[in-house]
Amino acid sequence: MSDLPKELVEEILSKIPVTCMRSVRLTCKKWNALSKTRSFVEKHIGEETSRKSSVIMTMNQKVYLLGVSFSGTHNKFDTSIKHKGTLIIRNNNMDSEPLVLKVFHGDGLLLFVMVKRVVVWNPYLGQVKWIQARDSYYQDDFAMGYAKKDKSHSHKILRISNVNSIPYEIYDFKSDSWKVLGITPLEEDVFLCYEALSLKGNSYWVAREKIETRNKKFFICFDFTEERLGSRLSFPFDSYFEDIVILSNFGEEQIAVLFKKWGKFEMKIWVTSKINPTTVSWSKFLEVDMRPFITGCNHVFTQSRGFFIDEEKKVVVVFGRHEFDDTRKIAYIIGEDGYFRKVDLGEDTNIFSHQHVRSYVPSSVHINHPFC
Image (cartoon, rainbow, N blue to C red):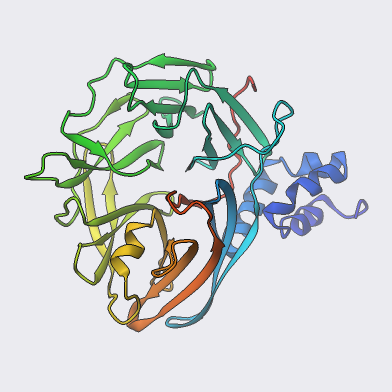
């Protein structure tokens, strides 16, 4: 292939799966240099995302990359969910593979939360940044985003401590340091329900009121440009303590929300038509009666921490546990006109851990130096 024109080599290599890019880069200096050019990256990422969707999922305190593809026409299609590989970060100072407590995705970067450190990783470029903790991260909430004051995004990590006297700290990749944020904390009667979701440099959480007479759910944004929490944002429904409310990315510009009221069988999904740190508007995407499919659907959705939707097929894939066996992780594929299928993803020995699931799109975003 060394005698072929550069454009043809680029076209051939762009067909190779993302999981094989490390081997491509190690083959020769010429291919390594080619794989990092802007034209190749755009072509390769475009090819990868057109073939199938990729999902990051935690199981047994490890992180897996899943490929999800649909073939056929509306309501007459086959679904394939396959393990593409295990995402393993190597560190010469550690005797064994570190256990991952939580995983986040934003702007093509992955944030792995461990007991006493966090790791930021771009699997596509092979860049890793280890960030040491000052104490345990076990009970903290995290979010990742970037400031948008200039063309080059300045990536940051927000840490919200649930046990520390310092509630908010932010890590700046450029300065390679933490700083305490002097911002107004969440109201005393507000509780963050689930992990943060990143969109366009900002992060969003489902939250609820602690007061027993209300317990109403809403969501809230952290603006990484202004480094402050936004006001309450409303869902297109009223939900309370026991109701299921889960956020997911819908492309790079929108958020989807899954809602199932406790004791009811209807699952409903909306997507944002407009969203920023202070305003939001919604449009309905899908509504399905779950009675014909899942006997214990309250249990299934309570155990879920992630889903994603396919706009073309009008289908949602919900990641949860088996309705009768907590040790089995299941992907529930639910669509219009009665389409339903279950895919067994394997055994999770830690039945008390929640499943962290994030859509993943390869990215050419570089992690700022210095590396740790």
